[in-house]
Every structure is written in C-alpha cells, then in structure tokens.
Length: 390
View (cartoon, rainbow, N blue to C red):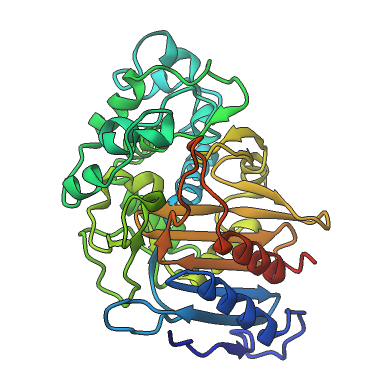
C-alpha cells in the first residue's frame, strides 16, 4: 500500500508556529500501524494552536491502489448530530424553541399521547427521550445490533438507493417499545431523536434543515468542503467505503454509493478532517452558538451508545476524559464502510480529526460481542498520540 505524504504547515494567518505538536514522524508511524493492522485507509489532521499536521496511510481504492489523501471528503456519520444540535441551540437563543418544552407543543402528530407531553427538546438532544432507534425496523437484517437475531448485508443491499420518508422512520421509532421513561438515565442513543429535531428545525425556520444548517452553521464556521449530499454519489475526491459487518461480508463490500436518507439528520454530513477541526474550534470558541448555549450543549448525562458502551453525552457533544485528566469534546461517526472521530480539547488548543474507509472489522464471538482485533489497539495508540495522552 502507498503512503501519502504528510505535511507540517504554519497557521492560515502566516504567523510562526507557537503550539506543541507530537513529532510528525511519530504521528505518521502511528497512522502506518493502523494500516498495517488491517485498515484499508486512514487519514487525519492534528492541530495545536497554529501548528497543523495532516497525514494518511493506506489506499482509497483497493482495486486501483489509489493512495488515500488527507484532503479527501468523507461520510462523517453521527458527527452530523453536533451540527443539528448547534442549529437547534441557535433557535433556542431566538426564543423559537424551548429546551424544556414538550415536543408535543411543536409536533403533536409525530409523538402523540402522553409521551409527547413528557418528552422535551432537551431529552431529544441528549438521548434521554426513551424513543427507540428506527434502524432495526428500517434495516431488519441489522437487528442483531439491537438485541435481535439477524445480521446480514441483505438490508444494506436492498436499500442502497431507497429514498426513505423521514416521517415513516420517526414513526418506526415512536411505535417501537420504549427504551426507558422520558428523562431517565442512562439514556439510550437513538437516531429517531435527531430525525425529530430536524422536523422541529424545519417547522420553526420554514426551510429544509439541510439548508438552514448550510446557511447558519456551515457558513458561519467558514467550512469550504462540508455539506449534506443530495445524491448517492459524492462528487469531490473521496475514498471508497468498505463494510465488513463483523465478518459477515468477506471480503468487505464497497458501499461508497449510497442514498443517505436513512440517516440524513443523524449521520448524513460529508466533510474533511480539516473542516471538522475548524468547526469544533469555532463551536468551542462561541462563534456558532452563544457561550450560554455552549454551556447547555456541554451538560452531559450517561448514555448507552449503539455499541453498548456508556458515554457522557450532552446536546450533540460527547465528553471524553483522557488518562492524564484532560477533557476533550466532539463526536464520533459511522456510515456503511465509513468511520470518523473528531475531538477538541476543552481549551480549544489541541484537535484531532480522523477518518477511515473500512468499518466493523471485528468478528463476533459466541456471546455476540466483537472479538479484539489489532486495529483496535493501533487506533487507541493513534488517538493517544494525537491527543498527547501518554
């Protein structure tokens, strides 16, 4: 596999670097170790104040052997949720949305009955609504992710070009058995929550949620390569996306071309690692939402993630604590064949955004949990190196 060149550059203002980055050779070696452990391709940008390093390792296309590059666009998955949450908080600031107002006050037909009066906007943002994930119903062959018995690529292949109706997906989650009482913790992560938030945003702004976010979040952060795709294909240079589905797809299959309507407001955004670092830097600096809104976004509760682990989740933000005690904020993301992670230190100085084009490489053990894989350890080392967490 070909390794693309890594770069060290001064800040965009042209001033001399003053930050402290890990040794570029050490960062590149950590990237190469992820590739050598079995990753198809991995690329990232690391920032420390005005010092920037970007690098990549592996290939963007296993057939052509095209090297993966640090400037490629990528499906960033649930990192989308931070963009949606920021848009909601802007409307909170304008008095059009109340965080502790029941969703029934805005969308009574979508969450009818007593639950609609008990579930607040805050509960949708931090996944404590108790509304179930729609995926085991929209993609039944993936039900094993959620306690069911099916695990195959049948649904992935069937829906490659399906244009889902968001109202139907919301109805699947609302009609499914609740995962808990409204407001109870730990919450349970559910894309249904963010489909409802997108509908709420459209109702109070009178425009499509993608358009509102493009004009009021993406543009405000000055992101040149971030957008919601309007077709199954991506026009900008991007890696092919290979899904392993825990060993059930062997060899891994290319799902680069996909209609993302199944998760657009929850995981549909396309971006670059450089844009993600710019976005989170602007967000934590109070340039996207007010400091008061940011403080609300950083109010965390325990939430059970889709992989069964417990995370500290705010309003579209994860809180991550390193071994050295430093706090980082950000989000991870996944789509079929794509993984991403973006973290920024609480002071906004150290940043790491990384993207990969091979997902769910672990095989499952007899108990249904993923078996350890060398990629896991290599990624842990990469993250620790990039965040300065020795």
